[in-house]
Image (spheres, one colour):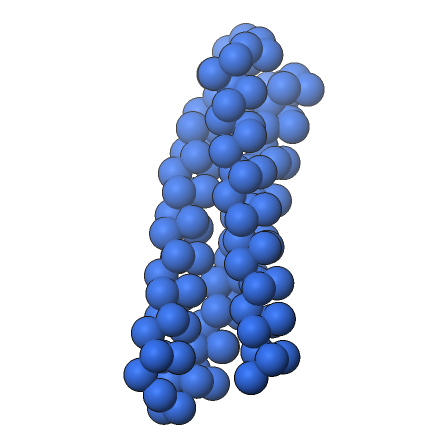
Length: 113
């Protein structure tokens, strides 16, 4: 049972959940883009499938990071802020930022074609 969540655990959980939501939304967008171009030429199809694959891998990584956060919520005691915990918080932020920038690039390219 979750008895209490300290500030570090709360931020860690929220950051990781945010990254999962962003990446899931961008995976959906990449999938829609792939479905829109899959019969318009081999080059577009390959690039669109690569976009879907990249977002799917990012989602798996973020979900794996979430599996590190959840057990911390159920163990007794507080998780102290440390360099490893900070890194584990920064990775999903970087993954979400990369996913967002990839989506923005896809939208820019779609506007040029």
